Image (cartoon, rainbow, N blue to C red; front, side):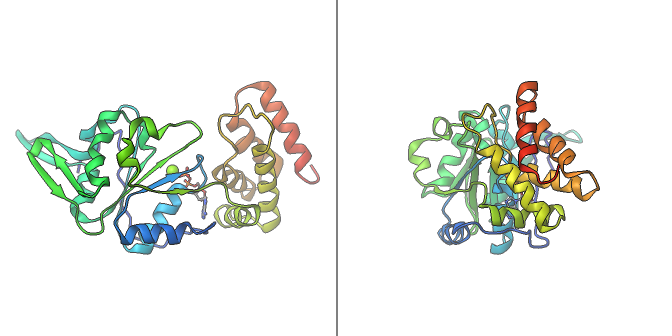
Length: 273
Ligand SMILES: Nc1ncnc2c1ncn2[C@@H]1O[C@H](COP(=O)(O)OP(=O)(O)O)[C@@H](O)[C@H]1O
Ligand SMILES: [Mg+2]
């Protein structure tokens, strides 16, 4: 198997991942899956996009092949390449080609990090043709039933529009995920971090206070993932204030003034500290 150090391809078909639906995203995804339509997941970092795809793959009984996008990614990283093996040149499918052949869900995570010439390979897969041209093999592979393309991006700092043709983009069913409302997010934090409901609610209050800062200097908001990390530290016995400092405040900024201001905000929100 090709293990390119830039491309992580992960397959799973084990236990049902815990996913707490927020609105009607599950129904929308299922409908898109029945039609084999590609899905565009939008949302800030750490809001649950990856977990959602994992849960949907399990729900639909499909294998999931995940590819983490990055700026050096080439189309060969997705499609495959000839490799030298014991003096012989052998073709090795890339993760996208494997998904096309096997009818898996292919999740291109943060794909817009990749350059334009990388994303062109997904165009004929995303539109009515549902096929993957493999130039190096001088062939075109039809996508097996069940194949579905899912791409994610963060509208806060990426412009997917610049890298994906408008005609292709229009084929995608867009699902917007955001940080869940407080009750749902507290449930998620409690479940994932293994903390009690009060601790989870306090963490969510911190998260929302930071998200709601007027004219925030932060590039990213305090994500569900960060709140879970803080909860995990608290579950390990760290004081909640210290846990938030380490997993949220210091993680969000290196600017001393910003860190101090965030710290004061956290002090105001956390009870009894
Ligand atoms: N709706 C949800 N249900 C269950 N867990 C969630 C949900 N949203 C977020 N999470 C938790 O938050 C973590 C970060 O989410 P993730 O899917 O990795 O974010 P993203 O891919 O958007 O960056 C997940 O590992 C999971 O623990
Ligand atoms: Mg992700």
